[in-house]
Image (cartoon, rainbow over all chains, first blue to last red; front, side, top):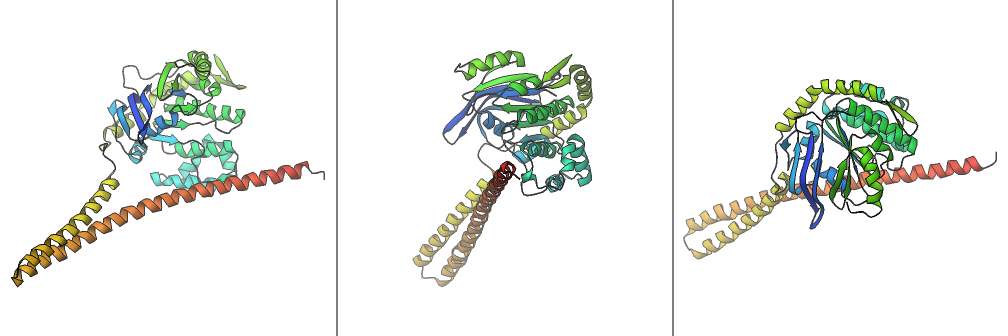
Length: 241
Length: 148
């Protein structure tokens, strides 16, 4: 299991985080911590507040209480673009790509970060060889898995320190999901911390170092993937914690 | 030890070695720490854009107020040079402040509208692409099933 940097502050730490859409509070005090190079799998049913948690971490939704800390510093109120520049990278639910552009053009969009296109393409194709074959194809006409690969390739060109993955497996075939999570495991082994949220646990627990169950706006249980595997079925079947 | 995921095998020893590499990759983490430390944080009172919008509205109101006050003060006196003073400072100045406020308000409002419009356009385009792909897949399926 990758270390979380014993003694060092976690890369990401949420303490008692509360957030609301208008008057409706959806996060009621979320606590979690992700160490360096760790994969934290946040699991829970639809409507538990998982995506909202990612929005809070990436600065897209202001918090109404608690603290969001990155490497020990409280970053409440940081704007999304600054967080992204620092190295907090979100791959949103579905596809974070431009469907009407080709694969190359999608990658070219990442040159805003100042990196030359050749370097971005080389990095993307080295990790996802299939994208090289598809480089002239319009992204929207690729399979769901390939689109997700493109989204990941685009994200990784930003040299993230913390990667936030929202429902990577949504709408994809199990074999493709396995392949994508294998890549997630490789990314984590390179020292990138990853917070991945999923509704379905089977594959993500195999690559996760720590897992948590989220229900009704709270992380109700955190433990090893094995512990969570057992706890999860109970939680989904109506257990409150 | 190997871990199996959906038919694929992960080599845990290789993972451990790679983890060491991850630990050596701490310069990125140090850089991340430095960048996080340099992050400028805003208050929870809203974005710069929202504050600018409120400023525009306030200037609009202030300008109109200046025009009103100038009109009342000018109508209160029969001294012509005082009336001209009120006309210049309150009337013209007030209209200027109103125009600046209106310009700021319009600029922010139009930006917000265009942003929403752009997002809507992207969403529609994506939905359209999905529909086209879906239709193509259905046609392909029908063609495959048709005896040649």
